[in-house]
Amino acid sequence: MRRQLSSRATFVYKFIVPALWVGLFGGATAMLFVGPGALRGDPGVDLLRWAFLALFASITPLLYWLLVRLKVVTLLEDSLEISNFTTSLQVPLRDVERVSGSVMLNPPVIWLELRQPVAFGRRLVFMPPLRLFGGFRRDPLVEELRDLVSRSATRG
View 1: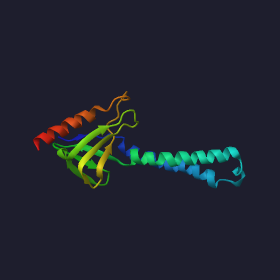
View 2: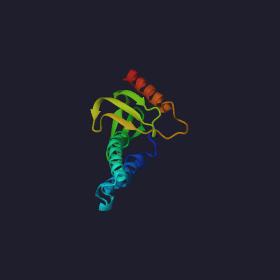
View 3: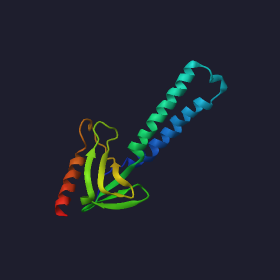
View 4: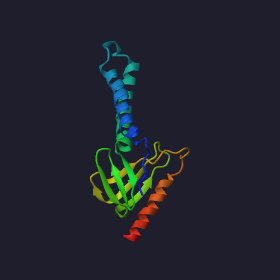
């Protein structure tokens, strides 16, 4: 049994969205600071310059925390295959300590906390398949994974 648990959009959210953010918004912010000298001294442009920098500086770490760390997770018989698109590893379900999921976060994410750290760390994050009207509830995959983890713990 092999079942993809991650969204097909993971690649876009992990690589494309952050690259666009840094390239476009970061570039626009940089241009406000190194742009034509005629814009210097204008109070409106000065305010805009610092507002763009504050926005860029506050949202970039959030994008890293939420998107760049995304992994691709596949359910195998009694383990999870976890990939960052270049490296893959397998983690037995019994090594998962806790499963939690986001509420009202777009894109939704699921966190897996492991008993022992692996090459990707101890806390892994992935995007479940996108669904309509998810909004105020955790993705049902969170409960399903919790059940699988608890069953594997009683077996092992």
